[in-house]
Length: 200
Image 1: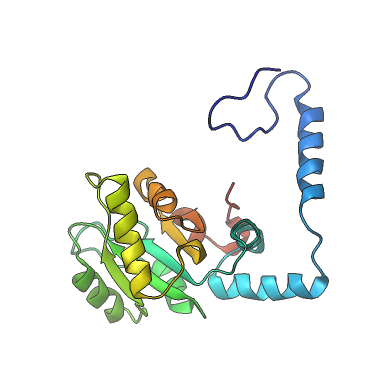
Image 2: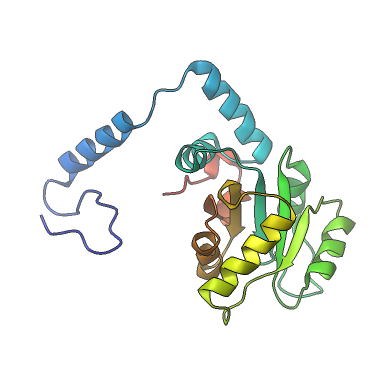
């Protein structure tokens, strides 16, 4: 067995004996997870539905962060709004309007700014709890962190209870820079619940 490199999650290797190692790894992970009372499972299933997340996705985020999700931060890329003339796709509009008991924050990427994005989304009947100019490619790690933290502080939202929904590696980096709860790819979030992939 080779030594695990930097960034390796210490999971099973792909060398000979992979089936046995996968079995051991799966069992070890399952044994580490707490066994939840049935009522807690029911509460989490209901909460996952309110948030538009599959139970496995919600439970992974909830267990990892240690707290409930209070808001989602959606990028304009995740919403498929790339140009000012673009319309919000039907699947995005429907899911955003169904979001319950959770804040909706929006990161405006060019050519949008926070005001124009807010106006556009409100025109579709989407509740906007906050909007910010999205961190860009040329922003440093600390600039990205500060911009995200300022937006969350304005809405009195703890960063480790906010999930980013995005489509690019840049947006995934926001999650680490802002110490957010998780990153969920837009293709998963806006997919039907039974087709969502739990975060790793």
